Length: 272
Image: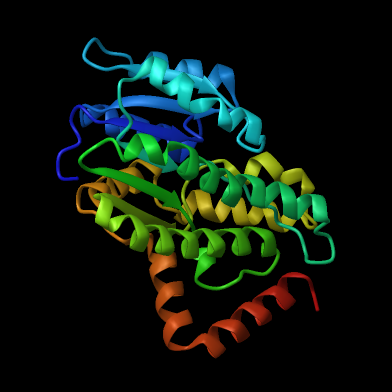
């Protein structure tokens, strides 16, 4: 999809740091936007900032963990836009908790948003994408898909599942002119950790991790630009940030070393 001007893009988690950066970057490309988030106030403010006469911008308050609310989306979207060309499954969450501390409710909550919401969005909007000559799906995975991270077992597992799903999706949909890109960011300067920070096993360590991400992570604007370029180039996989590129390389070439380093680092953090 070399030309984005005039295309309609659906973005989940649009009111968050990366989501809003993506919305801004795509508006600058001349895209019409369907913005989806659970935070009505933030969504309304974002839409107001992006509004311009040449663009159609609609806001949709949806809890993506509720399948019934996702099921209502196609009719809502078609009322606001004559066509849908791109889906960006950006909404996500993480929990910094040990395996023992992860309840089954925790697992369900993380997978509902990180994996099942993306699957449901693709499934329900695929007929609309097929109406276009070319279309695109973007799934936000993570560098955590390359190797399971300690204290983030549900997050790593859900993102690895999303990576595998994206690979299958791309193979199946290529004949239909629908591209699929799987994005693997490292640390991004957003507040995603804040949403569940108080649920962490070790609040002090969780705060340190958040500060490190803010200090050394890539800006959401820079990440958004890379993703937009990936859509235009129909990139299969996009790794964003030096930390993500290093983890991908080391976990591929030296998986045993990666496992040992992560185990030692975790043991040091918990004082073992």
